[in-house]
Image (cartoon, rainbow over the protein chains, first blue to last red):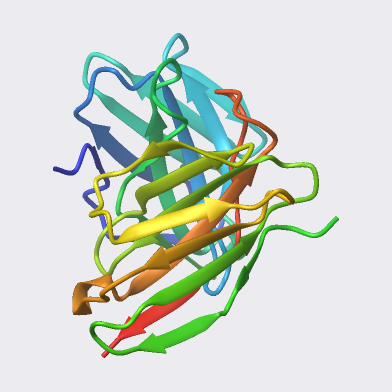
Length: 114
Length: 114
């Protein structure tokens, strides 16, 4: 049972344009969401997070939006750069009583083209 | 500061054998997490250790086990290997068991079961 879903396995965007990566979840107990970026042969690195009490969090070129009623979050990268090409994982956790476990989606491969 | 390290990078075993994977957390981190990334799936939570004790366990059979040593490094053991155990095994560490603590990932061990 995939509780966190990333339905687009890949996305191709031109340099300078906006990249929008989407994530859906089914477990209403999730109250903290994270995005990780992964380059080949490296472990995932934390990018940005959002608590369920917010609907938006911004950090430089990266913004995460959360729509709790739709159980949907998205990561916006503006402007996209070639160095952003990587696999992006959406993850969720239950802050209280969740045992620190992160539940990940299957990832979206982003390719930023020149 | 050194990041999370894992050894070996690659491991090839045959069905029925045992595999041992090792993880050294970031200096000062007391929590260690293990995740499995099988082909086509997101990272699946395996185990969480903190201060030498198992704190949480994912939906994996008992032949997946581990331990955490006094220096906070950790070992993941997989007994009676099956073909479907072939995956990338990622270790992460965090500075304690706090719910907001970010998890920092190592590069992973690629286990292949023939």
